[in-house]
Picture 1: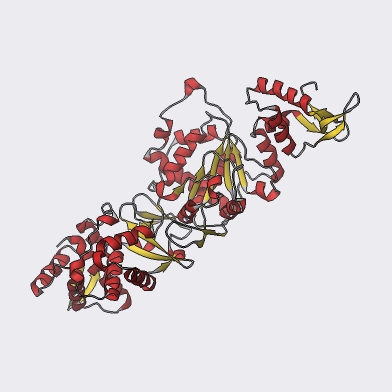
Picture 2 (picture 1 turned 30 degrees about the vertical axis):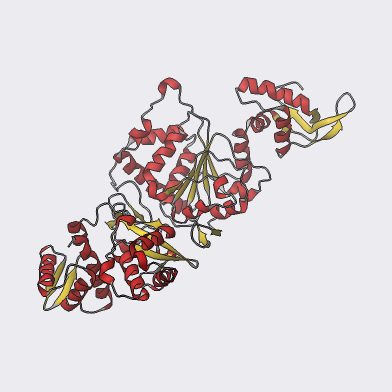
Length: 530
């Protein structure tokens, strides 16, 4: 007998303890013989009970089991070691010879749930499957196709379409079947790398349990005394202003409160290459860890058949390192994701369903998003920070990200984020929260070369401005590009992009000197004669 086989009877004993005033030794005897293939005789039952008592897993008094400590069993049996791949788990089919299909389906569902740590989860009429990972101590989604592929392999000749339907019914009616809304920790709690749950309000910690149904974990443990001047200096020299630094701090703190939907903001960091943006993202990714992060671009989210969008349902932070929304086909879906509204998604192998993503979004880019036809509400979604301090080639530290992601640095970053969360709650707003107009002005400075040229050189003046031929303005743009070392676009591209800018009005009009030509109307150019 493998010690792991004792996990199911002990789990069932604990379940009975929750619903009954007393748990009798006879109950333990029953669960042992029912669920462990190698325990049959009274002597084998007695030896197993003595072992469980010796290890401190159970305490027996007066024919009753008065204490049950499954955590100790997990340690003794190695159940807290790395989870075995699902397809490598062995179902004892021979033990169920003679069972009809309904009984076998019930026993198989019980085995998957008890031995393989699978949970069927209800999501808007669709059954999803999650499995407990004993290393990360989080529940991770398992594709439904894999579950039924496993069943087909294990049940061999017993596997039929009828058996598949029976198994689906067993999952739907199983007492361990739970709603997706029951998954995940509350907003004021976060799971840490060492398996403890940190209360964001009291700063107290406790050990996580499978029944917490944690879906994600930070890649750091809590040390309130952690210090780090290096990472503090890096952040303050990378992000341009003190208020922007505070907003980054508040955003990272707010993201800890997943699945909170108090704010519907995208944190956008604009800046050229070699300004530290990429290193900052690497540090943030290391803090939050793989289980909390998705990396979906907005064109991916807004594509026609976006199977991967369902990954956002239990993601804490989605990171897009090069925002570009010109190719977004379904902007309404992107809006719903950012607004944390319910949306319809599909996964391969199962029916589509409605879900809500509470992920927050961090975007970095060299250029501002394409804001053609943008509304005030669109600009209001963004908390825009800038990073313009270029690091000279001779001063670059190629191993900086590795140094900044040491354990103590990440502990400090967690504490720093917690302080940001406290300030956000006190203020009830982000420190750097520009108006829609201020965001638009800022984006013009980080747009494509045409947007930058217009922002830097062109003034709209209906009184003293004049009509400037498109070809003449393009020549001024060429001079500006050469001086600014920006990427030049073709004349047709320039005219198209300039026409999309809100202050630019293109039409055929009278020009100085007489005649009519295609012009940009009522404008001035600051530094170039046109």
